[in-house]
View 1: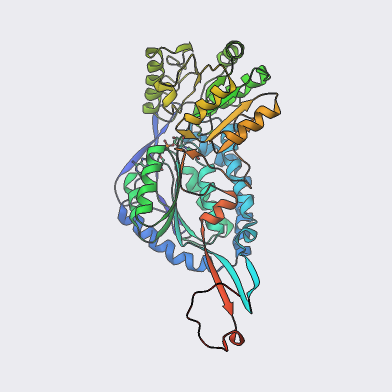
View 2: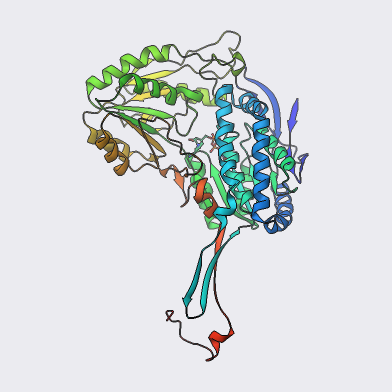
Length: 499
Ligand code: NAD
């Protein structure tokens, strides 16, 4: 059985804990590999080595660091097929979707080729008589990235590229369900010229996460995962004096106005609701048509599209629309939530619970489910299902639809389908959600903007990637300088405004 260990000081390094987690093939249900789970002592040793390596890396001029990013981007492109295969093998998503996972991470690496431009400080000549002020952006030191299972390439790349380009060393703790892509990315970074020790991949579970949060050398933690863990990590990191940005779960709504193109809205909902088996933090899980006529028209279009979806293993090729979910527990939880929806009075229009695929009976496959007449008090509305389940909540007006979204605990992404620019503008202005799509179902911003939700979807002040990432991974130092001619008159004792 394949064993995956850690990537320390530029090479795969055997773990010493003797503890392992199973990595499943989600399509067959078989254990296909084991990943070592590090101890706190192993984490502390990796951090110490990273801190030593960071000194030279921070002193490497930003343009040279950017060249490592250029080479890294080229290597990701060259190894695209292998990376996508690694993603699909452990996660189960289709190969085209896995390529998208790598691609959206690669785009952040591409922005980091321009890191020197983002690292420039500010300068004020003659801020006072003979006084110049300037600010610098300096790396934090050793930072950590803790990532979820659902984007095994994209999210580690969102973390590592800006952190490293800014001159930090990084401890990356990928999901124990899908660690292989991170190990491969670490190898590619070495090949691209990253000095040994600057990126350490330490595999593990809660034990290593807690060790990261308590390690005094680690200066900042970038986390992506479920909301309860995001909130926990944010609290413990902040208590320990670390900078933290922790991105959590989601419940993303799409409003469908009566004037929307219903076929396009239905196509968008099927892709955004069921793509990657619904295991996306930007998946649309709630359709909110305005008016019963709109709701009926939507159901009429959704049903044949959903019934035509093909569920299967990624090895079946491009013909498959989505694959299995990540574990048997995830499958049981999703099916349990679907049952709760029935018990609580929602109308289950399409039932995916009994889905089975010949030859893959033990795989973690869940068929697509569609609910109508869902109300906000039901568990299927309140919980992030993270599976191929779309719920329709009927509303009678735009204001009622907007209010529903505003009152939801989560605020990652949302979307409106309409032909009316005025309504779309009003929605984008008013809604308390971080990323908004207009006739666009999954509005993940391009890499030179930033990504981040509101409300319980994110804890911390700054978004991921784009300009915010460089703010997060650097600290500002501001220098006020004057030369001897300016202090001829002697010392000053009052703290005063500049003349
Ligand atoms: P998760 O919270 O279970 O795990 C995320 C990371 O935290 C993993 O590395 C895991 O090892 C670690 N972890 C898990 N339990 C822990 C604990 N008790 N203490 C310390 N560390 C712990 O999330 P997941 O199931 O891997 O990912 C799915 C979740 O991530 C969904 O809720 C999804 O919405 C969310 N997500 C959010 C975004 C975003 O940008 N907002 C992006 C992708 C995924």
